[in-house]
Length: 306
Image (tube, rainbow, N blue to C red; front, side, top):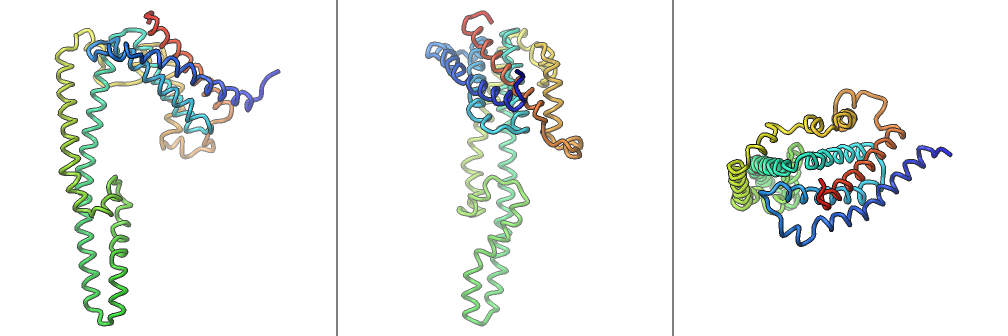
């Protein structure tokens, strides 16, 4: 008897959630005290083991959190992430030196994150200083209005609403800007919040950038040429997928994800806003197969055959 699409989907959800037990068991075997204590950041195999454990943790979290409600965006995003995880593990299987390539990419992406964060803080400080000026200007205008009002009762009402009026003026403008610290500034004051970022947070970010840059330099000085030859000038998933024979998967997954996860004309001007049920079932089958593949790869590492 052929199962309906709804039944197939439910069975796949149950199966995927059921993998969390073996995922958890395998992670524990990859994170024994012996393995953790033996980790050497200059050793490619150490990175292969460590990253494989991290990958399975991510998969376990997916099984716990991402399949309680099935919807298009979530399924496509998980499928794409799972695909990219598998590319890393297949690279490790193909050549353990890719463990050090991963380390290089880790340094690069962390360094970029902190540099981007630093740039955002500069923008935040500039914006907060701008809001401080706007606040003072609005307060001065409000106070000038109060001074020219002769009725005492009206003055009391104006004083009572002064803070709210100024706050509303700033809030209206703040909504037009992406700002992480505006809400804190409403409590601390815009100028003082800018001071805190400049004196407290930026030095910490600068220290992180300097430490990562130093570590990257040291890595580049000691990494063998055979590893350096494996490192792409720019990481491209398509090229990495080709190396491990996953081109067809890349083409399929990225065709859907690019259409659905980006605001392209094809995703905006279309009658099909979501995956059809049979397409969701196909993606779910793909996710389950990839989870099983990565569990098998992890076991190979544990047994020393990868």
